[in-house]
Length: 464
Image (tube, rainbow, N blue to C red):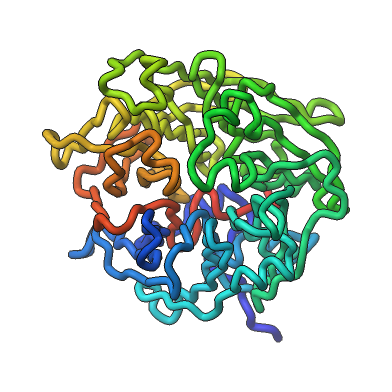
């Protein structure tokens, strides 16, 4: 009789995953904006009973400088239990950590000691270019058939990016995912609706439009990404475009409903050319076609031009700059990071067409420079950026850096890196955990967070 058991961190449904044990560790990708010393994967103790709670307990340095570690993910997750592509005996053990600027991909083993992960394999950029035909790997998702990696450009860096696949056990790069890309030219995030055989991708720009910072002429010309693309997940053919209009620039982070019977999700548009507002959109299945509607608009805030960076002085306002969102596993609360104003907002989206603002805290911000309760008299820069939610929805973690070349465009004094934790009430409302405020050395800035055992944006589920 077989005795193999699935990884205990895999759950058939999001509802079951919400009952998982609390996370005790976070892994945080940190980069050196000067690209002179290696980036690090830092381990943070999140066990509230530990003497090291709220501290970085280990730093894993990459073998090279200049990677700009960005969005990373696990090699395996709950989608390994799906009936159409089962891998139930895979293990959530390895972190796949790409360098957005270098196009290098690191495979990091979190065992035998999760507090001291180590690198077991590195794909050099030449290998990624040769095997995948892509460069600038951006987002990593475990899914059916293996590890999906979105990339922002072709191998030369001057033509469309897309998706490529990696084997979730050997970590070999299998190759480009798309069979027919149709009109898709720009790439950013990628996710899916497993119950509807549909993949979704979003848009940013080609490297020339972001690697040295946002290009005002490109932005004001409405030439950054403003569309969603829908694909047949299994035939890998492009099926449909939904265009938000060129005024809605930078359509970024995809957060589909975790319940696989619900064919909708949420995505942010970072900035409107009309009035500097930011917006949240819901995509949804309308009959046989996908559609989208704006459900949240967050206005810019008037500000003294003397408080603003050169890029914003002429507008005399601070745009919210919604750069990340996260959806709790019960599909009830959407967290919206306003990197410009310093707000972290919580919306009840249990009725997704009619969201309700249920909580808001402010920290950092271009003009506000709001303090943390632990140091109430100290001005902070940066603002809520990469956000992650615990599986039970009770704890929210976020960092304050967007991208090395873009940070100084909005925070010219430079960003001092930090990470904070919020506590969420069961029926709405968020407050700072005053014990957890982590500052990074001046040499590095923290970006993406992954939680031990999985989090609200690490897994896909095939059962409701």
